[in-house]
Length: 357
Image 1 (cartoon, rainbow, N blue to C red):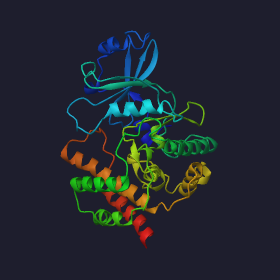
Image 2 (image 1 turned 180 degrees about the horizontal axis):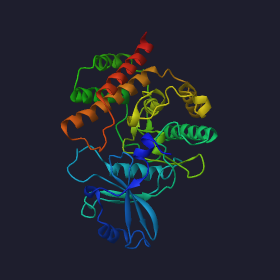
Image 3 (image 1 turned 120 degrees about the horizontal axis):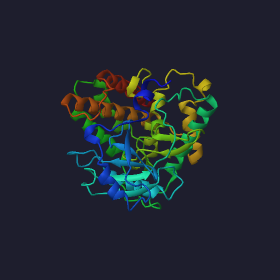
Image 4 (image 1 turned 135 degrees about the horizontal axis):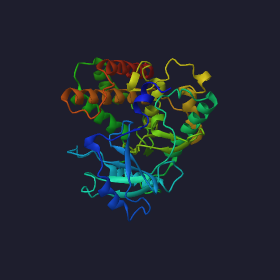
């Protein structure tokens, strides 16, 4: 029985009117590229919270996935699906599990915005970190595979796979911290002293060194397709936030299921307070140790990285609340609250104070 986030975000639905596709026009464009698809196309929209609407296209020739920019006027730096398609193209020549890219279309006259076509990877997406209704043995294998895949991604050589110019390199932590501090200041609705304290103190305790690699930006169970019947990862989804940066920052964000608030509701999924050994899920410390062993690196002190990941997440949520207050939020469901930002900020401060005490 599906509950919570699983019920809200899993599966497919009919596209709302403003996101409906002109299937006849699309069939004309696809005809020469995907012989056998014919004109009997059908499209359903995946329910999960993508900022770029994503559809399953079905036809006589099989199923594919179409991902598009949202229609209408957009922020210039957002929704860069051409960039995402380029990342998928580069990854298709590696061992990283990602959907195989097929075609990119910049002609906005086809469906009203740019889009790309990739393979449809059949499988399961788990929106709850406890993977309810899954045997503990399978759950343990999925978590092990999830650890293996993020270590594999971080070990890729961006230059060797053609992504060396994907983004600016060097001082990623400092630049990202400055960016999110500014974004938070622009979106604050109420005073939150802990956020102000973090903005003042996080720069003073930044790690002295950092590695640069390809990072996903939002790697988590909810962005993985698991085999329909087996406990293994088939594909990593949603590469919109991928860039070149510090892998330990990416890891700390990925660890959110372990550190997020236990009563997060639809806003997030949390492992806090659960009997992890019984579930077959490793502790956060064991998970980090396994990641480091796979990469052949020493286990670092993660407190600064966790404090920054928590601060950045609080700033992200604050931005969502600001857009909702301004009437410009894109989501049809508001799952966050101001109290959530306040509590995550307190968590981030505690993480940093544990480092500097």
